Length: 156
Image 1 (cartoon, rainbow, N blue to C red):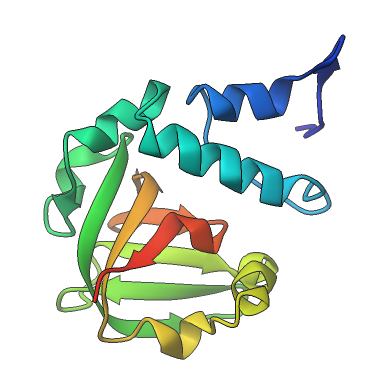
Image 2 (tube, rainbow, N blue to C red; image 1 turned 45 degrees about the horizontal axis):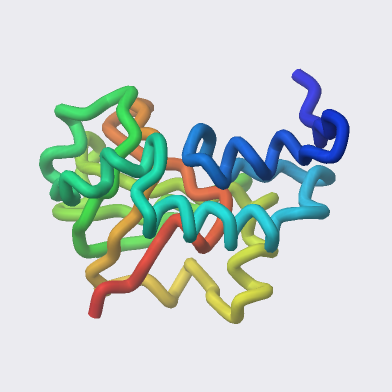
């Protein structure tokens, strides 16, 4: 697949889609030149409940409910109980940290975004109640992949 920035006349299409709530932030190196701009646009679209962000106006779901929302964009709330470090990723586990419980995955290639914000996901989130958003997928249980720290918020 090819990731690129698209400009038509004077319109930055990537930014416009995020601004209108028709797409959500997805970064993949080396395509990170405009990430800060995209974060601000997405935050505003979320606050104004534009496009896909209307879903979030309906409220969050618990980590235990996530298994019922596979394939959906959702905002999931729960407590991170354990972090597993693998060769290429970190797994932030919720609940009893059983295989079928909800989890959040951070690929090590994306760790630099967290570390730039002075967040070490290996230790920072353990024991904290958080809200994460993204598309819930199923891989040995329900999960959301975090590409950027703007997808996770500590609630307490």
